[in-house]
Every structure is written in structure tokens, then in C-alpha cells.
Image (cartoon, rainbow, N blue to C red; front, top):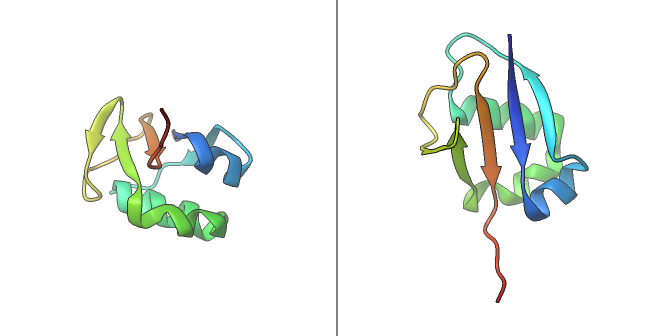
Length: 81
């Protein structure tokens, strides 16, 4: 089964997509999925220090599990007025 990864704002622009499907690996956490994404899309690395994460629409820490079939959102800081 796969994980759906959602990208928002400037991160979506950097990746060139708003959504990707990624193979699930047993024991996946937010950090392990993020690290695989950075390996495949090095431009993500400039965002990693300030990203927020959500697993299935609930904010999550880097050590949170990401089960098969989950949706992981990577949310960069946004500004606006």
C-alpha cells in the first residue's frame, strides 16, 4: 500500500506537484518519509527546518508513525495579509 504526500504553498512549487504517492515501508515515521522525499527531491531540504506535518489531517511530530494508506501533509510556513 502507498502513502499520499501533500505539498503546500512554496513547497509545492519547489517539488512541482501538490501530491505524490510514495510506497509505504514498515515502521515509517514522519521523519523517515520526509527523508526519503528529500533524497528524491533535494530541493525540499531547504524547507525541512521549518516544516509542519499532519498525518490524516492531525498535526504530527517527526516521530509520529505514518501507517499504510495514510496521507502525510508537509506544510511550510506561510505569510500573507
